[in-house]
Image 1 (cartoon, rainbow, N blue to C red):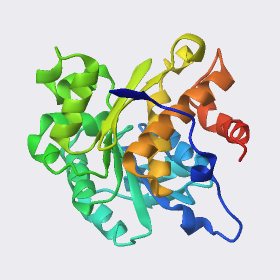
Image 2 (cartoon, helix red, strand yellow; image 1 turned 90 degrees about the vertical axis):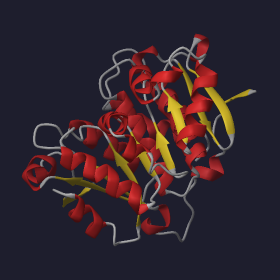
Image 3 (cartoon, rainbow, N blue to C red; image 1 turned 135 degrees about the vertical axis):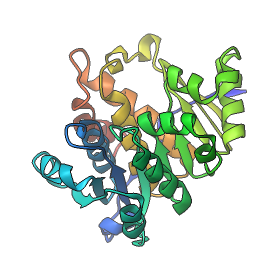
Amino acid sequence: MIRAVRAPDPQRLAKHEGQHKYDHGHALVLSGPPGHGGAARLAARAALRVGAGLVTLGCPRAAVGENAARLDAVMLRAVDAAEDLERLLEDRRLNAICLGPGLGLEPVRAELVAATLASGRPAVLDADALTLLARDPCLAAHLHPSCVLTPHGGEFQRLFPDLASVPRPDAVVAAATRSGCVVLLKGAETLIAGPDGLALHAATGAASAPWLATAGAGDVLAGLIAGLLARGLPPQEAAETGVWLHAEAARRVGPGLIAEDLPEALPAVFRSLGL
């Protein structure tokens, strides 16, 4: 049975008096080489807007200057190789990772995916990280229950080619079972499968958000989910909450939306929830 994704419980998103930033987690977003940082910056800003206490963007040393010119509240760390990431993750306060948006497909990027999975941290794998998973079954074998995969239709087909002819709900359930983690298949009707069953979020009809068909919107969604993971939400709840917030923000912006608008619309969405 498919259940509908509902508006989140405001208490699950609230911040309370007496808490400090580390009470709300520290998300790490991994970025790619110079000239390819926009997607990761969108994800990082979304993670910060959704309430992660701290967000760090890890990028190649050559891209630090570029990203520093575009970011203020998001911190920066140089990450050129898996060893750099492993050292960074010695800080256990870094408790959620987002990788894929603008990551790149070079062998060193596959090593970052491997190091992320080996860390056991809650992680959102999107875009280039999904392509790397599809290319290397050994990487996919290290997925774990704290991972969230966020493919669009083409990425899903590359990851799970034998499920291409299976009805979408059954395919997503099969993919989640096979991979051992939460799978979020993006679309106007987004399906999310994991240990809590199969959920549907339909941004159609009166609830439609067609303006999400724009470059960068998926990167924002990945950042939202990573921020919610950092705040301690379980993977499937983080995925469902992220999808709901993403579409609600899009409806508030309306026609003319670009991806940069989505994080900025979140405060109004939160106010509508009574936060």
